[in-house]
Image 1 (spheres, one colour):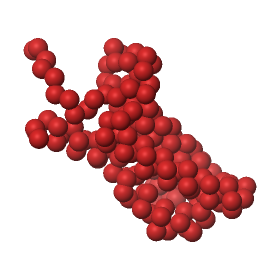
Image 2 (tube, rainbow, N blue to C red):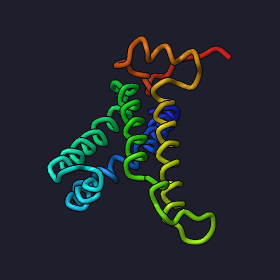
Image 3 (cartoon, helix red, strand yellow):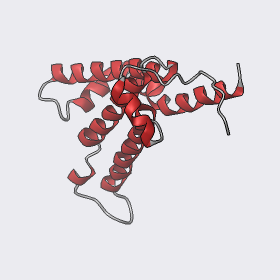
Length: 157
């Protein structure tokens, strides 16, 4: 295995590491607590359980897609949406009554978590669309396609 392939895998692993294994494992081990957190926005406990199960599947299946390169663009776009949705639903810093610029502040702590979710979404969107304007059309033309992350091609300088 070449160094280039190892680096490509390591970068993708770092991108999904939060979800697979950590967040997914936490949802499995602490399912009751996860459902409790989802109940903050869900109208019923049944819907809260469904949200956690859907989140668990997104975290596992889409992370594997990003890692393996199988429909990785679509998987990354779904994870980007997931990051933004969870930020908006559970990192509502604006709803805290204690937002302060200095000293202890749950609102300020949540604000940083909110922006971290959006920053992570940006990383997934780089996988989805590529790093240049010329690569955006590739996703739009074939959203189920792969970026073929582990293929080494010769490029001219």
